[in-house]
Amino acid sequence: MNTAGAIPMRFTLGKARLHGELCVPANAGGLVVFVHGSGSSRHSPRNQRVARAFNTRGLATLLFDLLTEHEQPLDELTRQLRFDIPLLSQRLTGVIDQLRQDESLRALRIGLFGASTGAAAALITAASRPADIAAVVSRGGRVDLAEHSLAQVGVPTLFIVGGRDGEVLALNRAALEYLPGVRRLEVVAGATHLFDEPGTLDEVTRLAGDWFIEHLAGGAPAPG
Image (tube, rainbow, N blue to C red; front, side, top):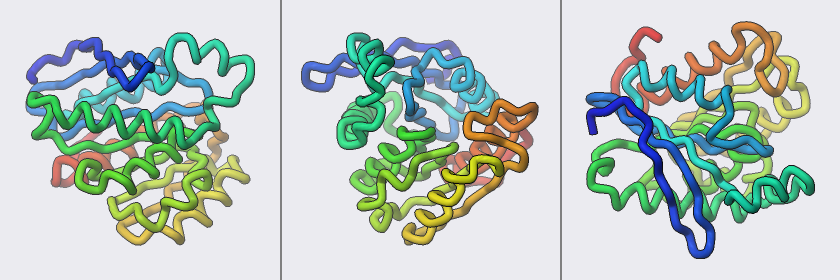
């Protein structure tokens, strides 16, 4: 558990075969599982950029696809599976259960980093696996799609939303009130839903990294 190179992973969940990439830096202070949404994947340059930044701060990362290789092109046409929150959360929970069976990773506390519809799956999994999930961060998340599970999410949870993403910001503010534990909303000024504006994704990465370091590694955030 002391390599910084990407390790190919495969998760078998019934008939579904999900592919991922695990990166564990030396003396990792926690494991962040990325939960993509709205058609994204482990190959997303945005997700890979954030993951590399987490690795440099001593956090292990898992980038994996919630959809199979056959489902992804179908979803590009229909856009239906990305909104199938029960399916996505079920698969995420299955991945978490398999990670917990890996002796080389068992000592690492797990955080979930969800985006868009993937954030809803992350919250549902956090509610159903309180002993396995230590923190959640949502980036531009459709957290309202997890409305029936919000009151059971007891882990420290951070919502990050763009200041110009008005509809999602309103949904996040409403959902925050239902969380019973440590919770916070951070608004990134000038950012839209995808955080494409200069410097906005870097701010997301800093905020999320600080949150995970505090709640996974149990210490004060290190300099980014």
